[in-house]
Length: 353
Ligand SMILES: CC(C)=CCC/C(C)=C/CC/C(C)=C/CC/C(C)=C/CC/C(C)=C/CC/C(C)=C/COP(=O)(O)OP(=O)(O)O
Image 1 (cartoon, rainbow, N blue to C red):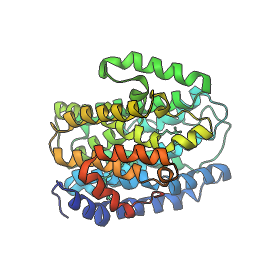
Image 2 (spheres, rainbow, N blue to C red):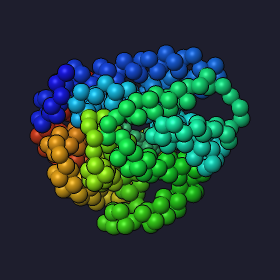
Image 3 (cartoon, protein in one colour):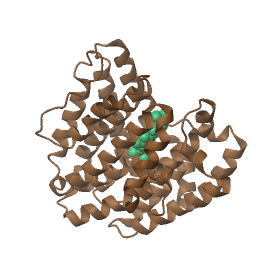
Image 4 (cartoon, helix red, strand yellow):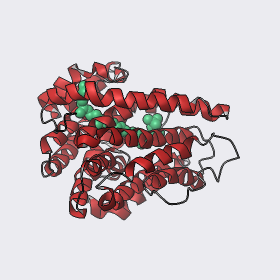
């Protein structure tokens, strides 16, 4: 296996298409088969639908496996299981009308369990009427634990991984509560964490907590070799919250029309106007760039950032709206030539383009 970290777009494209994406798809296929055995019909449908609908998350996350040296396979196994937990739980939250914060917190405890091998399993469904998932969620958690505990760098990176996981969990809880509480909770969330990024806006910080990219970058480096706590902190702070903020703002950018029609919260709607949006995304980009440049394998990380523009802005929802198309063109410029290169070669992703 080629264990060098690619430093140009063509290498990333070739190795993602030949190495990492096929591996991620195979794991997803296996999890779908396991999901099909879930006894409870509604949960079975939600789990299997999620795997098919969110394939892109694992395909994209697998590309970070190019940082994992000869431990790429174990990284991808961990990442697919972890992302499948995130996506499955997001579906459970979306489909739940009770908006019970305690329930959202309990089910998401699975993410913390995934990062703490050896601890007893939490009772994830404690706030739900009893149902049988056939051990599906615990099975995903166990796979995460069994892989991550073998990573040489895990011991020194575990605390940072748990910290970014906790930020993601808090976001999921606040984002799915009763509508009238979402804004105040997310604003307060920013106020209590403002010291981490004083020049961010509250809705940009919310996006900064909602991505799993930082965790995957930490996991990939942990898979490769022993790391110091200082290295771990530097990696975490390069991805969280700025690059992650850019990532999820792009995700919300493409969903804006759909969310408007369905009266769903969309973080792009808080910008004053289109110019403000483009200017602020530029700032998120610049802050992320400054931090990514200081990392080992800087050119790889910068290409991941550029790839995000390409993959999100290629979504078919963008083409359907002339104004969005115009804004997307302006945003794609921020990704430069590599973003355009990825954009025209995006066919290998299972995204609706
Ligand atoms: C190979 C080629 C052609 C190009 C490579 C280019 C490249 C380098 C691309 C980068 C790919 C990459 C790293 C993608 C990231 C994938 C990833 C990890 C996605 C997960 C993102 C995530 C956690 C999304 C969830 C966002 C979230 C919390 C939404 C909130 O949900 P909600 O508001 O309920 O909305 P939904 O209805 O959407 O659930």
